[in-house]
Image 1 (tube, rainbow, N blue to C red):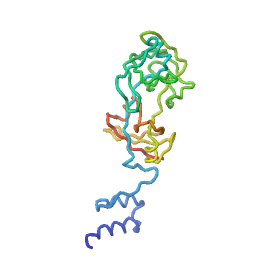
Image 2: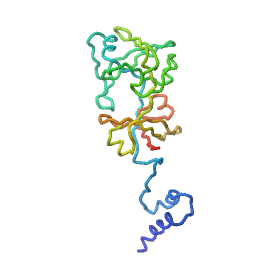
Image 3: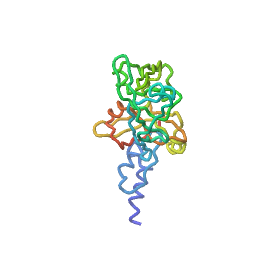
Image 4: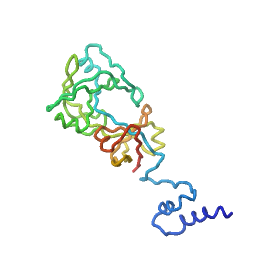
Length: 238
C-alpha cells in the first residue's frame, strides 16, 4: 500500500490541486513517478505521429509524345532506381531545362510517363534561370511557368508546366485515419535538426491507396531545415 502512495499523490496533484495553469505542466513535474502519457489534444505534437522527410531535387515528368521528341521515336524510359512511392522511379534519361537567363543541365526525368509534361524546380532554381514557378500541387499547371526542354534528339517548348511543388505528405487511407486527417487537409510538420529546427506550415495531405507515407520537400526547404537523410518530422494536426 505504501508503494502506491506516489501514484495516489500524482493523481490528486494533477486532477484536484490547481497549483499550475495546465494539467500538462502539472503532469510534467511528476512524470518520473511512472504515470502513463497524457492524451494529446488537437494542435499538439503527438510523438507517434511522425513521418520520414524526403528531399525532392529538381526533376521533370514527361508525356510519351514529348519523350519521343526528346529521345527519338518509340523511346521508353529506363529505370535507374525505384523511388519510395510505389511504381515511380528515377530514370537514366536527363534533359536540359532552358530559361531566359541560363540553363539547368542534366535534369533527371522521373517515370513513368504522365498525361502532361511538368518541371518541378526549387524557387532558387527557377529564379536562377529567369522563370516564374508558382507554388502548386503536382498536376496543377494552369498558368504556370514556361521553359524549353532539350534532349539528345529534339527540343520541346513548354508554354506552361514549371512549378515549385507544394510541400506535401502522401499517405494511404489507413495512414490518414491513424493521423486523424483527410485528403487535401493542411498540417504543420516540425523538424528538429542541429541548429536549424523549424516548423513547416501549409503542408498538404494527399490520400490515395497507392501512396507510401513520407513528407516531400524541395532542396530549398531541406537546406533551410538542415534535413539529413533519415530525418523525421512530427506532424501537428491543426
